[in-house]
Image (cartoon, rainbow, N blue to C red):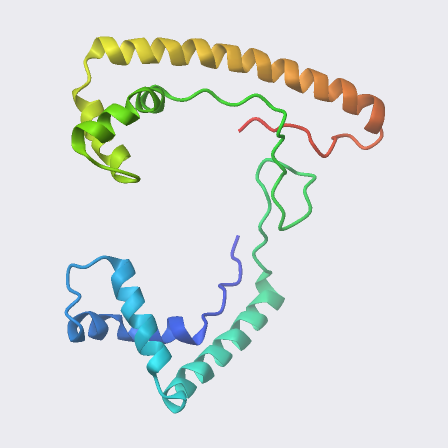
Length: 190
């Protein structure tokens, strides 16, 4: 099913043609993409409005093309895959009273060992999970099996709790909204 491709703003049209020259001109070879984009944004902001006009004209043509495609192909619509009753463009609301999914073995281990890893490697913030991932690879099979067993037990309990939660929701919504079909807070299993 073909859908209309969104129109590009002037900046992105300009960036598509200038990215390589920006990398070369400012010595950004091998640098992170975010650094290149940051420098490109600075160059774009400092650019003369007369130079930007060419890209603004191209963007206007691209917008016309998009509007024509929408007439024939249709527009992309963002709809939650899990909620058929949700209005177009809206995601299903998360049920705050639903039971939480259990942590997978790695994250349960990380929760238990976060402070020890931070102290061992003298790291903070996003560096902790990076070091933890390296450490997890060296954890013995016995310890991994222990966390896996805990996860399986917690997952079984979660499934029971979720089934009970859904039954309670259905029972309470059934009396309120039997004519509507689904209540707005129905839980959708992912």
